[in-house]
Image (cartoon, rainbow, N blue to C red; front, side, top):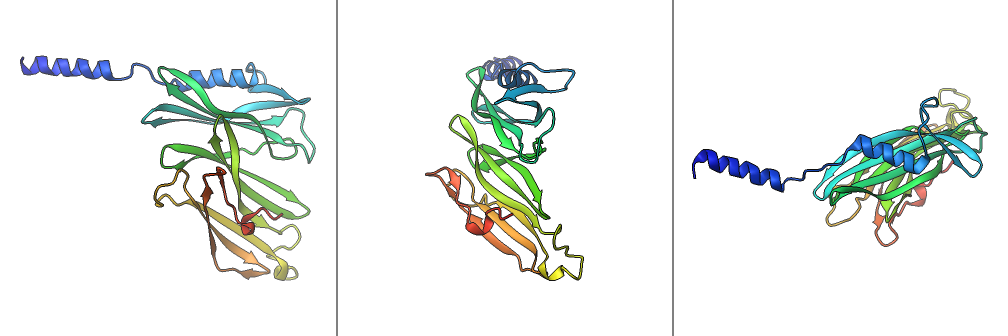
Length: 253
């Protein structure tokens, strides 16, 4: 067999063994949103969703396709505000979904369509897809916050697939301050001011784990004084399938 014929045969073998089907993100996203929230409203530019007597307008906050050795996945995060506005105690709504390619078809492997988040009827709009484990285990950092009586706190919820659902496995502070009561730039209140920031990283170097530990470092001002950076290591409890957040990192405001 000549070189040309050998090359043609090799190409044919490669094409026959390669998958002829791949996940179509746009098609699957449209199908998912219709199944979870109902028909799309062009006039409202979103998916009207009614739950427990409250109406929300759901939108796609993030949609990302990820390639894995077992096939492609589509990670979708949604968020929706109360249609007619809400009071201080009313939350918005969020959803998180994992679609996976298996045997030439796409299935929903994990999902939660109605997770209450936010206040005044508005859902937070900051989310980030992150790889939380070595075996292509992805989840989301969903940042939310609250201000009341001059105290402000924001935090990142770690939302991870667990069985057929998606749930919060930890809440890690992102920022805290008392600026509405004790401004740090006011000499009269400087001694009582507090403004703290928290940097979150994943320890991807640790050995055989299913979910990476977190490394959280706090910096900022307490009682008017610049503090030394303090770091906590947050291990993942694989038995309970959640992070073991120390008391010092619990949301305080």
